[in-house]
Structure formats: structure tokens, C-alpha cells
Image (cartoon, one colour):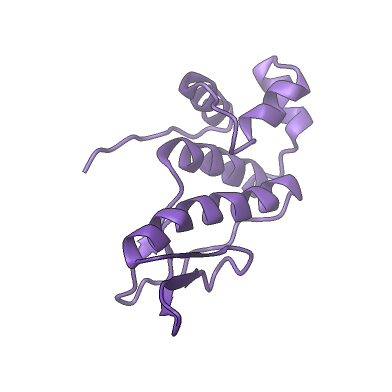
Length: 138
């Protein structure tokens, strides 16, 4: 769902730069491809957090077309899925807080991608939006 294709560009001085065509705010680099892709996860999460903070729709990932993809961590994917459901339904944070019986700062923390939210809280938010969260190990 949040698998974003990346472009790895080898640099003449060594190392690789990673760019995301769908998320232009995310850019990073590493000494080799593995390190660059590892750093790309953090760059992607940071960039997507800007979308959440400014209440913009999340960018839709394009087709990978043979390129490697990067996705946020599982917890962040769950948070982003709830955020996406909320924005698709036109629900604001205050309304989500009311539906959950929470204070607004609790909802703010739920959408903070750097905050280690409890998974049951993310599931509760998904439920009040009429959604479920599925976890799969592959």
C-alpha cells in the first residue's frame, strides 16, 4: 500500500543517492546500495510526516516498473493508513478524538510518525473509521 519506488543514482565520487519520484521531499544517500535503501526508509517517513502535519493527501505510489521499492515501518504504515482513511472521509482530528473519546493531543500523537503509539490505539482509530488493520508476515 505504501511501497514507493526509488531511483538509485550512483555518484561519481562513490555512493548512491536515493530519490522518490512520488515523494520529492524524500532524498538521501548511502555508501552502497544497501545503506542507501536503509536510509531511504527514514527519509520517506520524514517526508510523509510533512504531509500529515500539513493535512495534505498522501502521495500515491507509482508502479515500480522493476525499480526497488521502500516502505515505512509497519507501525508507520498502520498510522498512515488510518490518516489516509480519515482524510478520504473528510474527518478532522477533532472529530476523530470525539468518536474515540480521547483528548486531541492523543490523536496528535497517533499521527506523529516518530511517536511509538500502541497498536491497539491505531486499531481503535481504524475501527471508528469503519476500517480494519491487517498484519501479514511474508
